[in-house]
Image 1 (tube, rainbow, N blue to C red):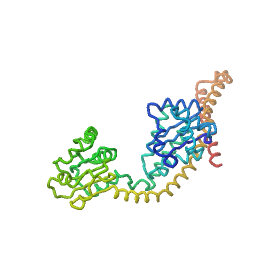
Image 2 (image 1 turned 180 degrees about the vertical axis):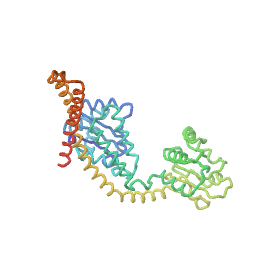
Image 3 (image 1 turned 45 degrees about the horizontal axis):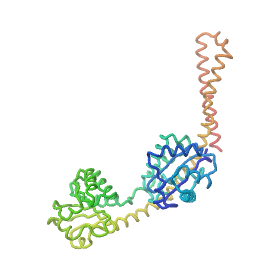
Length: 408
């Protein structure tokens, strides 16, 4: 089965993220499309992995995976694509076969193939992709075996190395900066902008015990929606210049091309308070007017600062790659043994039934009259002997075959 194992991968290494997005399939459409692909191309197993910057097709087939196969693959799965698009994807995908495919999956789940090395989320995404494909009846025994070994290996990577210990995301780094300042959990927090970054940041803060949030956003409905999640209040961005309730922390991330927080607005927000304030400005260009940092008692955490820390942490993570590759190499060797043993198990799975059939024939036909002449005690002893031998005949060939394979 190993030689029938294939992967077609689209990642940041071979395709723009915008192009990868075209390969995503809505969850409601996945089962019909993937089942149709499996049947029409005669795939024995299939798994679909889709993340924000990765789409991979994991499958088993006896057919040769060459350009004609890839063209038919994408024509079947994406009937809305033009011939030009189909040819584009057929040319650009990276293909892996056999043990190279297993090695690729191990690298993916261990995050050394990721855009950001050490991002642990990928292990969950791989597991969820398998569970979804399994639920849809697409996978079989071999992909199950590969994914189980992949997840076990990735767990070893994250526990035995430091590849994921130093944070690299803006949200994580910003939170660590706040934590190091020992700011009280009842601090008044102004959230300016309700996009994905600020949403993640504020939810992260709430998860860690912060509870006083005010959200400002250009679109009021988005401000109110985020504020509801945070048990806070939402206001239109235009109300920022007249806000009079004070603050301890500002977290700003808007898409504006000018400074949202001007010296005048900042002075009004202070409401005469002179204590040190914290401003986390993760917008590009920044939302905070630089003059504010010069004129006021403020700790300014900029996206530039966070990016420098992120780059340093990425360097530290990269130092662990060799250690991860050693773990993957060992896991790859172990998988070859596991796969051989599984091949024997599948080949011999009919042995127990055959042994039972032989026993039934012997007792009900061949030695029927001889058994009838025995007393009850003799029958009981004979039944125990036959039962013991039956179990041994089932297990011993399996054990011997496994030992022979492992020695080879």
